[in-house]
Length: 339
Image 1 (cartoon, rainbow, N blue to C red):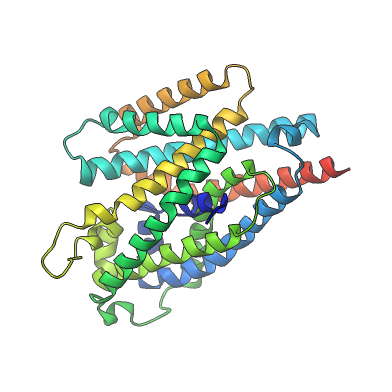
Image 2: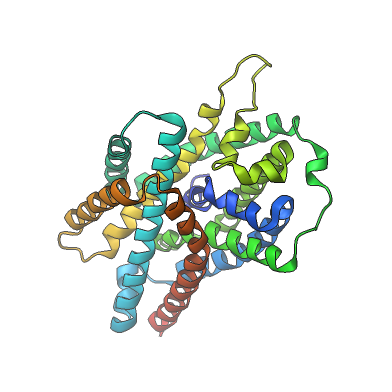
């Protein structure tokens, strides 16, 4: 897909790894995928408003900020805060997942530094280069997700889905709002796009469907009880996969698609932070923020399970409040710019 829409695919999926899916199951159990379907519809509405801002703003975000000095400063600050929060979540998820399953004996900083260097290099190259990389990686991610679903579907235990709709309406609503918040919060970063909205909604739906398909696989293979126990249920379920019934350990290959999700999201966060800061010394300040974030994760957040879990319970609230606030302010700026 030769457009910026490929970036939305990775942004939508990125924050669900591990804790995101786990919380959805905590709220609704085996009915979580049904709540996620409603959440996908709510997320579609939020993404539509992002498209609205992109379609009607004239020029870059800097031009939009200048249309109203006070509101422009507020919008700049809120977008910068959102970009920083998403970056922290991406780095925490990447570090926790990689050290837990892929590089178990490697120190956290050694895992973070190469990842950050490549992301900084790509982010500083600009949005066009990021888009090209996303366009190349997106087909491989989709194919891997589909193959994983087809392989795991043969292992489904149908009683794991029965009975249907046993959760409470409140839990169902929490699931829907959580899915909408987690799936759309990183999409704030698409506000940097310039008049490019073609296929954005379609790609968001595609990414959401693949997340729901992952939830169905996890529930179909493990059931509600086991799913709530595992820290990264979508990775654990891949351990059940075998190629031709004798090639094992394929989970590490399939799980790389989540690392790619986090990489593209991290790159967009760095790009957004750089573009949000004042132009003078923005690259140097961005690198300083990234270095400080890496040490914060290494010293405080890394492998602190309780803190990480609390972060994810807070994420949907932060996502919806901050996301809706940014939409309102940016829509005001767009209308003010049009006058």
